[in-house]
Length: 220
Image (cartoon, rainbow, N blue to C red; front, side, top):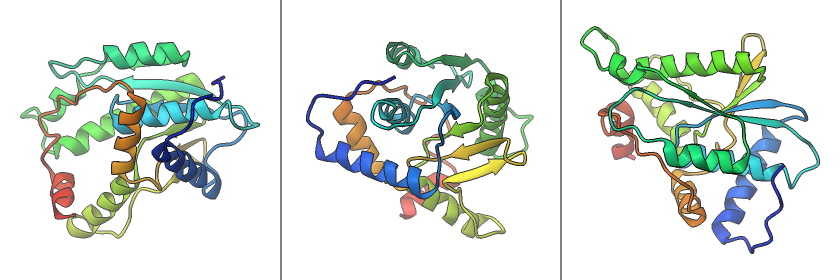
């Protein structure tokens, strides 16, 4: 269980805690005895989310179990070691799934958008791992900007007006996806991440600065 911090909180930490707490309560994201798989890419959002959920255990009267799971994409130059060591220092159970999803999505055989295929493969792997670990929830680090971007992508490029939801049940409620950072904008999370000096894994994907999502970000 995380220990309550004795240091004075910065304003950005207070804001992050307040808005995540509001999302957890408003959307009823976490219940007592939940087993939560945290999808840990090693980026700003997912590392911040893992730490916040871990730290929250020492501040609330209910308990839940966290499992950090990283899906390696198989790109050359991937280095997850600093984040892996950090998770170990927190005492959180941790799994690394090795894959070739990245190269497969960018291969000539793939007729789909590489980001779409890679996302689907990663999501499938996470659901399978959640089942293996007996987890009833999967926590993603999607923030408010991600939800807005997805909404606009569906308007401009899709056939429906929809976005990601803070809480989405799957398989008749057997597993529920939760997004505790849904009320936080990306800038606030970045500031919090920098203030806390969390480790960071650089994304080596060749498509990270292209595609429909990047077009929407530039529009915004």
